[in-house]
Image 1: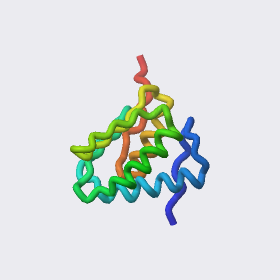
Image 2 (image 1 turned 60 degrees about the horizontal axis):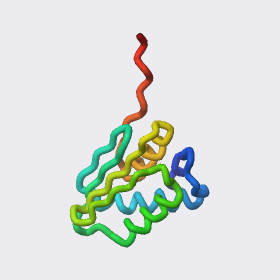
Image 3 (image 1 turned 90 degrees about the vertical axis):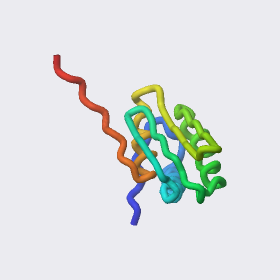
Image 4 (image 1 turned 30 degrees about the vertical axis):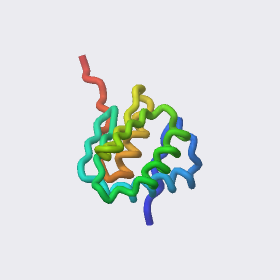
Length: 113
């Protein structure tokens, strides 16, 4: 059984819809040939077998439920970059990275002075 996706502050999806979105990302993960995740963004490149209809459906849902995400898709290169500008939205990136099978770095505690 797949664990439920993590709660993302600001996401407008219900728990069931969030599970469906996570499943779509897990399916898309099968087509990833290169990936990078950091605190402010996730970038993936897909292979030529990419299910473009699934990707477009997934991104349309993402844009509606999480308008704080910046989604950039280079169709020709099959490269997707999702980023945030505010630190409070980083949990969404960690959730997205996790659904794609990546590990996004956790925020670091401030250094003592």
